[in-house]
Length: 192
Image (cartoon, rainbow, N blue to C red; front, side):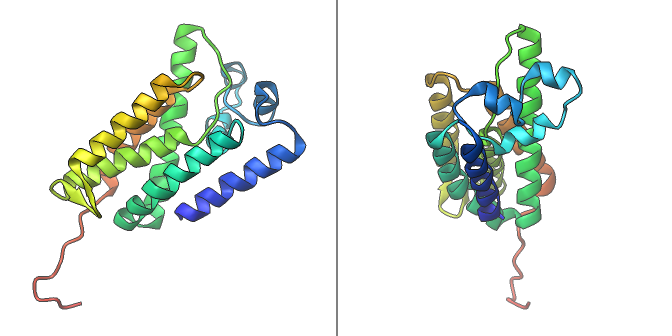
């Protein structure tokens, strides 16, 4: 499923790049990126479609590398369907929080990218590590927390990043994983 999500993002990026510039905010907004004015007009689907759009090659490259690394660990723990649910719910939480904050601050910007959903997978990984007594698939509690801190630092220190989407995704992924994730129990007699 992780690879499938990456492939969908790449296909969308290639198609968008063929027909215009993914670095152009107006072009991105015209083709499904999140922009509060359009959402206020009832185009709520943008909260979803913006998760699969990226501003330029470095944006998609960075996001897909992190998605590939974190997604595979979370997918192994949760399974294919729960990974997809976590990705989509986290991405929507990020989009909704970003939209609400833009409305509240009356400071609108075009927003797109899978990073809110990816932060959600990181939030899910934090819960998975906690649920497994501080260690899962080579990831310790300290490493999971460090990953969150590093990603937050990158977002805060990089200009033009939608940190509210990241925060909404992180919290959304953590909460949905509490609901969806169940630690595998092993039969002490090794009977299948």
